[in-house]
Each structure stands twice: as structure tokens, then as C-alpha cells.
Amino acid sequence: MEGKSKSINWEIYFWISLLGIIVITILAIILRIWVLAAIPIGFLFGFFLQKGDLCGSSAMSEIIMFNDKRKAFGLWMVIVTAMAGIALINSLGWVNLNPKPLTYLNYIIGGIVFGIGIVLAGGCVSGCLYKAATGNLNSIVAVSTIPIGIMMVEYGPLRSLHSASKKYIVKMSDGGVVSLPSLLGLSYWLLALFFIVVTVLFVLFHRHRNKSKSKLSATDESLLRRIMLRQWKPWVAGLAIGLLMIPGYLSSAASGRNYPLGVTHGVMDTELILIDSGFNHIYKTSAPIVITKQDNKPPSAVSNRKGLIPQNPKKKIVWWLVVLVVSLVIGSMVSAKMSGRFKLLPKSPDEIIIALLGGILVGIGAAWATGCVVGNIMSGWALMSVGNILFGVVVLLTNWLTTYIYMMGGKISLGKR
Image (cartoon, rainbow, N blue to C red; front, side, top):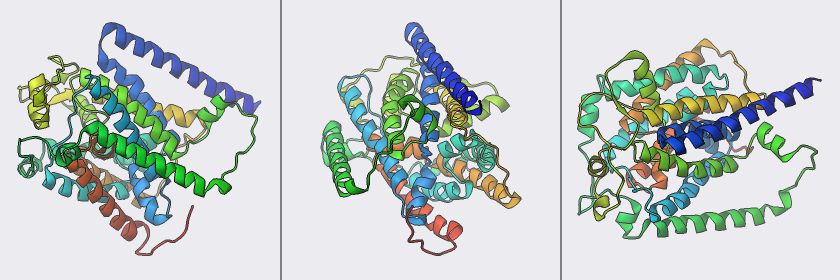
């Protein structure tokens, strides 16, 4: 009887979620209010993150803690899948590529602070969000302090230093953004194709080498039940998120934000709505997106030409990001409840305090670097921004050093999971 009750529960969650996704998507298309599309996109993003337990912090830390690279490969699957989709929609003229500029000091300082913070907090921004939604007390505490760190940089005592560091910028000779295509003189789609081919060859080689170890277990469960109730392999979740990046980019650009997935400023904007007022509300483009030969200009110039950045100096609320973050939490919670993994677990006081301080560092680092694992690594690497690649390398090395000292006590683990 208990098994039947659990089956009914997950099916109820599934059908209500599916109906909601379909209805809201149809409304967004009919009304052409594309910010509504952030609801199903955020919901699925959170669902996929929880299913694959795909946290950027643990993906990095587990490489040296357990010699486990599965989650790191899951992140790469997000990036390379997104590259394929972005190359397609860009070639169709549906989006204008907008990689972030090479403000190297921002990425180095922000990357160091962020890399330390994600270990102490037990997750990156998106990692803390989906873990908090499943009842992880440390993540709940970290999520409550991440906005404090972000606002310290955006509007608080660190604002002047942050503004000063943004002046250290490297540009191409024509004033354009330093990206892999502009640096190597190759087209975006050609580089995307290269990374896709290399990834496919790597997967085929890996599968061939481990063919004898792979075994399929027989089961009477339906495919839908296995998908909804079981945990996913990180690469599967990565593939799903990479595909989700495409409608995410399209709806984001149509909602006044010419960029794929991101969560950092969505967390801050959600907090601002609760404590402040008098904002510039960004929820749609004020001018049509037109791709021209000037699109190699820095992102600020491109965005201003499209009318995406308000000239009013008031704080701005990007509603696509707010809706995405809130929906992400709901999607993660639904995923955890469906599979019976939602549970509020007690933590020791010292862990909670460390998570609280870690959340502040995560917020400071993400704001200083203008993004986190989602915005700067998943989306930024997919757009081939050299600045974001620098950020990812700095975060990885800092994460490893912090993990080695704080999590491993200075000892090397040679074990495999």
C-alpha cells in the first residue's frame, strides 16, 4: 500500500508539472510575453540540477577528493551541448552572441573569493539553490547570505573597488571582446564543431575502453518511472541542461537580457524586491534584435544599441532572472519530492556558521566576477569568452587548494568512487 501511495504521489507531481509547463509555454507564445518562458525553463533547470546532483563546487572538489571526474564531465556536457545549439540559433539570426569582456582583474579576484566560498558554503550559487530546495540546512543558510555578498559589491562598501577593477580590460584591436573566435580568427560555429567532435571521440574511446565493465540490469520499472524517481548520471543531466540553454537564450534575449542562463543577479534581484523599491523593471526588449557587422563591439556597446540597458541610474530588476531563480528552487523541490529525497537534515552549529560565511564569500566572488558557475562557466564557456575561461581556471585551482586544506586536512586521497 505504501509503494502504491508513493507511485501516486510522483505521478501527481509529474502530470501537474507537465501541464503547467505546457500551459505557461503556450501562454508565452500566444501573448508574446517571453519572460513567462523563464518559469518552465527555471523549473526544468532546477529539476535537472537535482536529478544529476550537478553542483559546480562538488564537480571540482570530487576530482581531488575521490578522483571522480563524472560531475566535471557533466559540466562539460552542458557547455559543449550549448555550443551546438547556440551555433545553430546564431546562424539562423535568432540571437546575437554576447560574450563577456576580458576584465581580467575582476575574474582573478572574483574567482579566488568565489573558489574559497563555494567550498565553505558547500556549493556554488545554483548548487546552494537546488540543495536548499531539498532540505540541506547548510545550503539554506548559504542561500540567505549569498545576496548580502552580492549587494556588498553591487551597492555596498565594495562597489568603488569593484568599479575600479573593471577598468582593467583587454580588448581586440578593433575594440571587440576577446573571445576564442576573435582571438583565433575562426568562426564560432567552426570552433563549436571542433569541441563537439573532440567530445564525441573522447566518449567513444572511453566507452570502448570500459565496454567490458558496463552491464545493463534488468528491471520491471517503466522508463518514465525510472527517469522520474532515479538519480541521473551527471552527463545526462548536463546534456539536458545544455539543450535547455537554447530556449533559455532565446527567451532571455527577448526579455531584455541578451545572455543564456545565469542565476547570480537573479538571487540578488529577488532579495531586492523584498527589501527595496523604485526600480527599473526589465522584462522585454525595447528594440528589436538585429544582427549587424557592429556585433563584434564590447557587450556594453551591443546592449546599449539594442536598448537593453536603461539610462536611468536606478537599480534594475531583470524579471527573467528573478522568475528563473524562483522556478529553479520549485523544480528542484519537486524533483526531490518525487524521488523521496526531500528531507530537512540537522547540521552542527560550526558547519552552519561556516556555511553562512561561505555564502557571503560566494556572493562577493560571483558579483565581482559578474557571474557564477552558471553564468561564467556554463554560459560563458559556451560563448567562448576568454575572460570566463580565465575565471573558470582560477575557480578550479582555488577550489582544489581550499578543498585540500579544509576538506582533506592536507592529505591526498587516491581512492575512486
